[in-house]
Length: 266
Image (cartoon, rainbow, N blue to C red; front, side, top):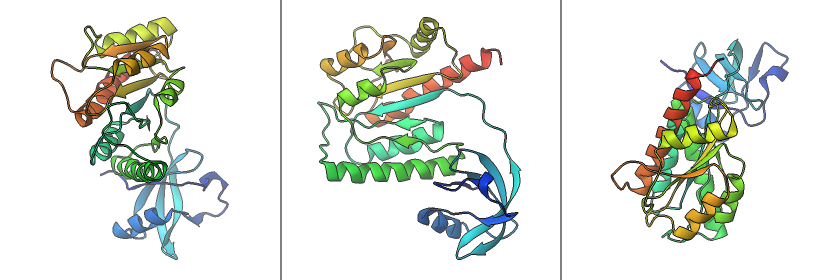
């Protein structure tokens, strides 16, 4: 059974001098610990502010915060591919669904962006509230699925922000159903790695999925121009809903990157 996971925002466990010390959990995490009915003797997994990873044993509670001792420190995680999903703003709870399930898959970051065909239009106040909600969903999904790191969710951006974000990525894969000819995901990734003379283990790949109405030709042209290793890719013969594509596309990319990374010498 996997351990309950917690992420510390400011506490660095290596700086703790005492054998037993309280975990300075955020208020929502402290509430989550109470909901789990954690008790002395139980173990939890903790990723601290320095991104170090520990297994800790609860020895007591202090003002509802668990007091723990270090049971073991896990080895640093080897390099692994990173996938950043740029998802066009979608209506309803579709963005919630994408962020929750893509986090479980191992997506490293999300870049929500406003598209020309986005039905949803957010002012600054609503955008900030949505981003806060998406960050909470990503954190909860990362805790539930035992991720070593909590994915970043950027502020809602425009096309120009997305182009700047992906300018130096290993590859940019644009999912566009209107393209007359597209590459397979594995072909596009391998072509980018060869062009860059890089390995898959430390690749950073951007994946772009449009909203319900899809991307416009202007948006696609800008995305293809922002990076010399940008490609149009296909997700198969079926036309997928935006929330389906936002989960399937990064899953396929992560599968391919991990497959290639396993073949590389350590």
